[in-house]
Length: 426
Image 1: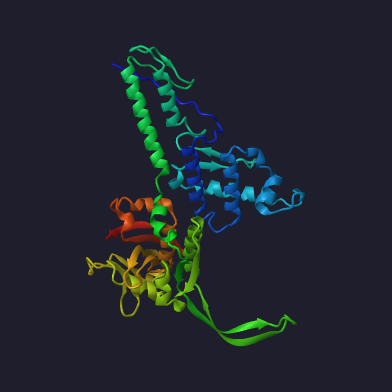
Image 2 (image 1 turned 30 degrees about the vertical axis):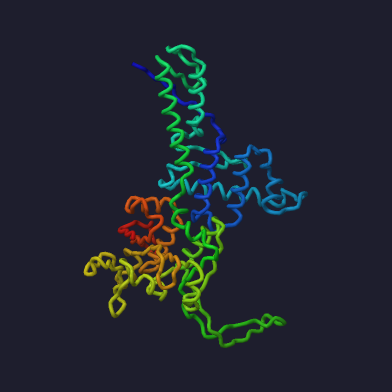
C-alpha cells in the first residue's frame, strides 16, 4: 500500500504570478473588475490599473513610481511638480476605495484579488483560499515529481526530497509515476479552466466579431418645443427659438453606458441612435442592441414573435411579460398604481437572437418599468450574473438564440440585483 503525504503549502506573502496561466488569470480578473459599475464609466481608473498590473506581471515594479506614472498615464511633462500636481496619488487613493468596495460584495469572494497597497503603486495579487498569495502551481508540482522519478534507478524509492513545503513518500516507482500522471492531469485541467472563454465573452462574441460598428437603439421622448440660445457677443442676451428636442430617460442611459463600455473593452465600437430615428435599413447593416420596452417600438416589434414577449391591458395600467406557452398566466406583471409607490417587483427580458426580418443578430435588454431595464443592463455586463444562466440552459447555447426573463425588486425607485426566473434556447 502506498502512502502519500503532502506538507501544508507555504506561500510567499507578496507573490507575483510567474506562470503564463497565472498571469492570464490575473488579466482576466482585471478585465472583470473594470467592467463593474465601479470602474466602467471612467477612463482614468482603467488606464491606471491596466498600466500598473501589466508592469507588475512583467516584473517591472521599478517603473511604478509617481513621476513615471504621471508621465506615462496622465501625459504630464517629465519635469512636472508632483507636489503641486497630485493626480497620481489622488487616482490611486480612489482606486483603492473602489477595489475595496468591489470585494466587499460576497459574490466576488471566490475571485482573484487585485490589491493596491497604501503608499505603493505596485499591485499585489491574492488567490481565493490563499490570503497571502497564490499557492505553488500544479505545473511546478508535476515538474518536481517528474524530476524526482526519472533519476531513481531501482524499483523501490526512498523518500524523495521535494522543495521545503512538500515531501512525497512512495514505495514503488509505479506509484510515483501514477502520482505524476495525476498531477499532470490536474495541471492540464487548471490550464483549461484558466484559458476557457468567459460566459460574458461567449454571449457577446458574435457582436465583437462583426465587421461593422454595433448599433445601440435607445428610447427617446419629445421634451421641448423651443430652445433658449445665448448670443456669442453678449452671453447675457438670450434668444428663444422654435426647436424640437428629445430627451433620454436616465434609467435607459445606465444600461446604454454599461453595454457600450463593455464592447469597448473588447475593442468593439458602437453607434447610438434614438428609437424615433432608427430605420429598418439601419438594422440590416449591423448587429443591434435595443434598450427599453414600452417606450421603444423596435423592442416591442422584434420581441413580439418570441416565446417571452411584452403585453398590456388596453388602459396601460397593467403591463406584463407573457409566455406564449402559457398565455393565461401572468406571473411577471407590474401594476402601475403599485409602481407609483416606488416599491414593487419589476421584470425584464434579455434576449440574443437572429431576427429573420433584418437578418442580423439582435440583443434586447428591456424591463417592463425602468427598474427592470436597469437590471437587464446590469445582467448584460456582469460575468457573475451570466454564470447563473448556465444552470438553466444547455451547453450548446453559445451558437443558438436565447431568451431570459429577469426579476428585480425595486425599493425606493432603485432596482435590486437581477434574478433569472425563466430561460429558453432555440
